[in-house]
Length: 331
Image 1 (cartoon, rainbow, N blue to C red):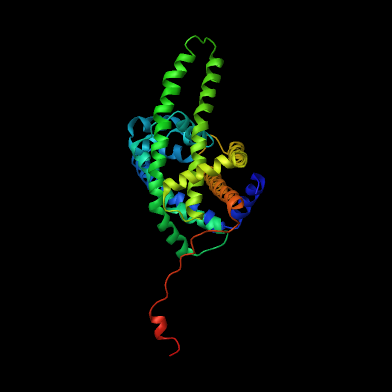
Image 2: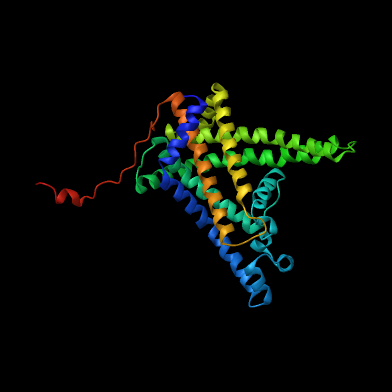
């Protein structure tokens, strides 16, 4: 299977799994709910029945907003103007590129999100690999089987990404970048040098993202228990099919950029109302679809190269029949 065929097959598999899209979207909302409730309580306590409350409800009151930020802490510190509209996307991308520290409460929520994702990804991969419904019981049983395995894989990933985001990032932007711009007098030149370093940093990050993606796929499709073995097998697959693997990844990244572009065109700026909330949720749904498209298309490419569509080594988990079933059967 070529990268184009895998991309199209990924789209087909995602469209045939609407409940999977809804489930991932709902889990995203549920994970965000505790922080949203905590922030609501802080805002309610600060506004009370003041005149600023009416102004904040009808639009954006930046004077009150700055006053709130000067007095708040915890999750309230993340309630900055950059969370509105498309600015939130840029803020998140900037935080990753520049390794911006998150507030402790937000970092805790991100860690919880990652743990939940590690639990669900086994069932998601299994459902997309089989390309047919398996039922809620079998889905969560598969999640439980692979959760411990993927936690072990996650420890490997944490070690790799920590090296990239701490040592490698610091070397690029704290040591190399100042040396490169020491004699630069034009700000535009300094900008292009920094942009080039972002590209240098992104390349290994993308490579290891692909490596761990295919390690998870091989673990599920082939029912692998050794995560080190899955990583090695993933390396072999990537090096044997580099054009298809990287071409498919680039196609999916392009799809993600198109979604971001659409959000840029339709996202209201400077407004916090129901319309802005609805458009924001639409963007989240599209982002969920893109995430599943990454997984589905990569799985389709692997199955197309080394197995066949719908092949998964592990049988679908089935709950055992109750012993009472024999008592009511023919004697």
